[in-house]
Length: 378
Picture: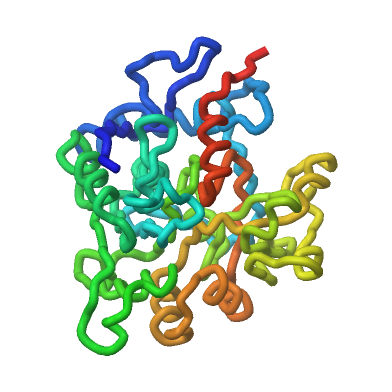
């Protein structure tokens, strides 16, 4: 599967949809092209304006990926009020992101026959990897690592064609591919054994002098469709003095068993995490989601709180968990996070915008149809 040329653009003004399709052919999926430094004041001003909430409320058809297609709707991220320890502004220069390239992607076969899951096309000429990449760029996070293993040739080609020498300047940042590789020693003979093991094998990069200022590390999936300002996410993490913060969404019973489910207290701290529960375990994780801002009707339909698989860790917490506390645990969702909930301050960040995990042919098909839907404006 060959790569396509994408000109990502660096603000959150995305293409508007109308009955006739996209307006402004020059305004692509994610807004203005990046030229120059991330410190460019014009870009910063445009970005700040784009985050303001529009007073008008647009009506839209259920299931349509409205948040992806327009920035005219106000931000719909509801965050619980954490205890304040003296507000400190989170600095994107002190944040690094790690995008997980995914495993074999068997549930997306034959799309993943010769391509990694993040290299699967979405929304026309884009690839799934462009979603977290664009979220990082638009959030001002310019230190980006991509972990790859399975069928990585197409993904590597796309990253090279799209993010290097294409008018995108990462300033003092970078996009660096960290491919699975064998290293000396018995442990080094193994490929990535899971999400946590993949990150563990490259924790040494945070010992480099250029990365020692990194205070928080974002762990992102490369196969999700959503738009998020990651610095809002990190700011919540800093405000709550959390060791780990997990981005969560409310989901219905039909999808709940596909995700890690959480229970949270009145301060937003997660006190229970269960990975993909079924039967009685699933029913036990049911909660009242009206306190997240859902209406009583929506709360009945979405009575579970699911982890999006999007995490932010304090750097020292992540290194300690992977190297010393749980050196043999290979997965974040089924091993590291459930154990860490019992010992650390793990907070929930409630995300109420469009989000889809493109993990199956069905979800891939439905997400692409949703992107093609007309927006109801009346």
